[in-house]
Image (tube, rainbow over all chains, first blue to last red; front, side, top):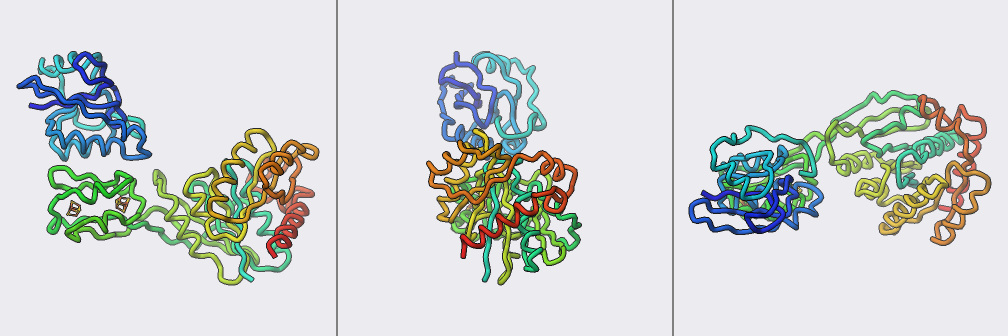
Length: 120
Length: 283
Ligand code: SF4
Ligand code: SF4
């Protein structure tokens, strides 16, 4: 299973980026093999609108089945839901910590977007 | 002769609407028929200063793509073509975000299957009212709607063939300013004679000059001769159309829904002077 985590760096020790659409990038981790791949999101950082939509498409293209992030707006959520990707909000700390919490099974995927608007 | 004057400003609150309505009333006082087009579609309030109610209304729409799922193979070309990110394709399924769509038509051309057609989406209202020899048309954007430009274009379709048209533009330097002023014979920029006001004026004048339109400036709330502001204009080669003195009664009158042109002593005369200069200049 592949998991995309919004983060400021390209290692498991990197900090979570709380934004989804305007995150610095995503670390896509394959939980079975442990392999990871970093996707920069720099183009979306400058997008005037629709950053979340584009980021969600990019994540879908990686084959990820879940996203761990801080906040997610309604448009990005709609794309992720259509792609069958579960969204886990309010990630904290480092990528490794977020993955640990995910593995624990005590983190419920959210049913809906948690914020409105532009800068997430 | 048909003439169109656009009144604009780099930011809100500079007195743009008061000047636009004042010029329209000055023309009406000469017995001339005039069209006043309120293109400040997020907050149209020319009708308040004119003291008329807008009765004739019709919905305004913008085209938005609709996908025929029977023809779509999910290739994703449409989403790639859309630089506004208003389309997403995941799992061979197209998602449309109508509120982000700028109606550019790129997706339509990009689709190899011909699966996309445009359908109208309501974005607001175009309203009209008559007051003496003034025909007022305005656009009112629906709440939460961001696409001002298509609505402004629909208001501007009501530009008259023969009379003088006064456009009250949106504040700021966005693409709605360009939609509102493009093609005008003259753009009148209203600016407060303060450092901040002049800063916004510089941005707005650059935007208007990109369109290649003749421009002049009305300095508002001038204290004394506003020598600093005049020097600022001279440096930038911006012709001065007139100076309006600092007079709190004008803003106060506008704020309570009055008509400064009729109610504030001296303001009507200032507008008639300004009009005379504009007509002379554009002749
Ligand atoms: S018309 Fe233009 S802005 Fe609208 S969805 Fe198509 S490509 Fe995007
Ligand atoms: S370009 Fe046409 S065929 Fe391809 S996904 Fe878009 S609508 Fe479907």
